[in-house]
Length: 350
Image 1 (spheres, rainbow, N blue to C red):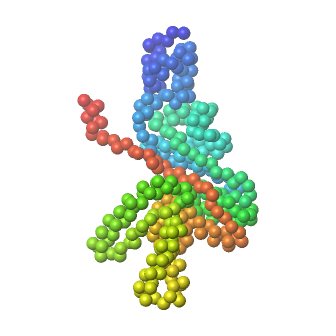
Image 2: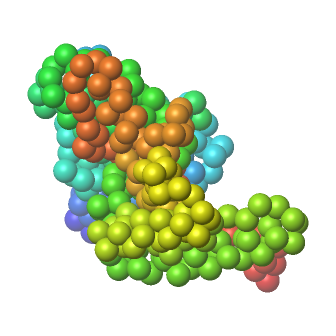
Image 3: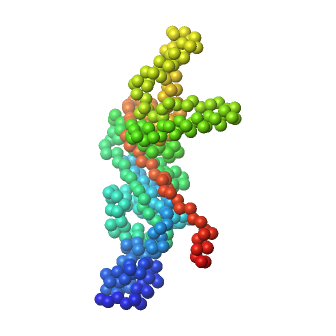
């Protein structure tokens, strides 16, 4: 049927949707205003035009874990403002979305949007009246009884972590669950981006090396000016670079230094291992910053996370290894748009 300009104008006034979308909605629904309004809401088009170019970098994470620790889901949902993120309607939307993803295991965000739940999500967003996005989500599962799983959500509901460990037995897996929550809390605070240094791209490590070493040199210049102890400046930044040849040379250099210091050779075996460990610590700064297993464990900084996990499993009479983790933090990696309020006002007045 023919759609009149008056009908399009009326629908636009009711929904604030773009003119062409209003016309299409009316054509698709034979001019029925109520059905056209619902059609726009289901597609999240109502009030969407004014939101399209805004940046949604605030929000909350959702977290759900099974009572038996067999599965956990984390979800990041973004809003434009923290004010909306603290709204009960938004909090409820995060809760329901997390439940939906936990229950249905969708392949991606588009899969969620194409379901009946996607229509509910779009309609709720339209009611809230701000740009809201499901940015990302993940679900990890303990698929047999030798896999231990646990997680943690920070009190501000902006960071959530899931950790998964493969164990030698069901008994060890059961005993490791409380410890894995501590590891998840560690990851929450220390912001690892990958599991191990082995996951780094060699080109990335190479590109980071010079800049990090130069930054340490500049830091030492300032420490020297303040007459404070200087930091060791490394040659390398990742275990990936510490080849057998590099380690052999490091050991030779340590022994040469001990000889120059006049240390008796018979006590070198008591000194060298500690200095090798120090060399590794000084030359793996990238690993310690970004790789979970290679970070110094916050509850015992004499151990890496990997060593702490092994030590805990040993207490239980078994062995364990973290094989996967997910960490979501609201807004991480999103470039926030800096609004110039004065310029905006001037533009509108002009």
